[in-house]
Image (cartoon, rainbow, N blue to C red):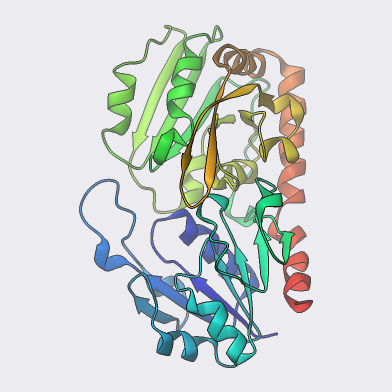
Length: 344
């Protein structure tokens, strides 16, 4: 099977996702969508590009690759894979002309039903029933070789929240977390990691936190995404919407339990006692209609207290994290990817 990959090579989550695909499946050919010309010096820009991580890639500088580039890239391939989008609606059309099968791993909020690949490989069960056409559930694997599993303590005094680059409608629930922390009674430290300087300063200046909650913030890019998880006992991710959440995968890669809302897709694969009740707070429109949820702040605080004070509960959570780490590793899921592509 001659496999092609449409990839990113910047500081985005799509870059992490597609490069790990490249490392583990070694596609025959790679087309890098290079949007480095849009890079600027603002702290929230993630478009600085390094194509050297790919061997002899096709490179298109811009968002929408032209027909000639696409034709040269796809000719002779059996399958082309891309994450979130194909960047050009011509990809599945040209692919069919060339006898190439196409696989798209969509993020539902940006799902365009007018673009019809041979297979939609959904990375989570979030809104799965709303995908049209040929589809399957194909979770994004965890690159476990990136992480050293640390020896975690008997209880969890040290928590981590990954803001990343702030997304629309506070997707990762940073403001919800700050509201929940005012109800925490245990002595805890929470590290906030953000890639946009100044963002956390504004939020923390308005937060009313008790003396038993120590806050540390790190507002900068890291060279390697796995370095975000070199400290911390539990990931706090009161996510308000979304399917695939790479920080959750990455925390599990480091052996860390995660506290999330009891909403889809979290409640389709994470242990029930890691989840906290949440209620719908509103909605917005991307390419699809998206509901927004907010966790119960007191319940979220109680879960933090439980992990910080109950050794038996935390031991169970650590064990479950390691089990999920293995279940969703590239070693486990790589055969499923290969079989899925070969059966197209």
